[in-house]
Figure 1 (cartoon, helix red, strand yellow):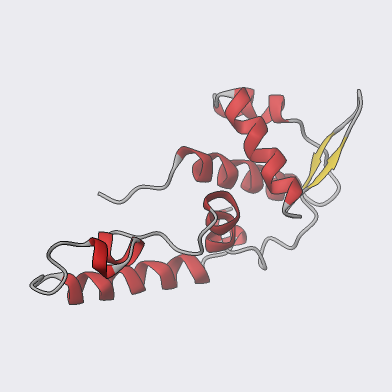
Figure 2: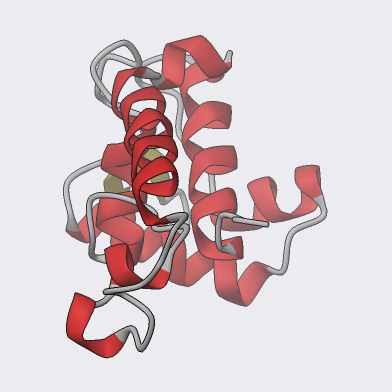
Length: 135
């Protein structure tokens, strides 16, 4: 079964949490990790990636933390997947995630076409669903 990576899950949880709190509310990785029982070290790395890519603002120091400054309606689930995984879409079959030449049954595969259609539908949902819809 296709599954989001833990990093993507944690990024979505963190962004959703910050979006619910509203613009300008600062939160730390530790607070989010404790609230949702997430591993702090991995969440901290995810938060750094989100900050580096401009999804959240990062503030250093004793009173530091992160702020979500975007409109939750404009941030799509696929945007978060792309920034965390480095690719715009998830792939459920090898010939879509890799090159067809690396699939030994590509020329004889009888399920490729329907699965590519399914993949397209999944990507459409991820491209259309905003963080706001997760609240």
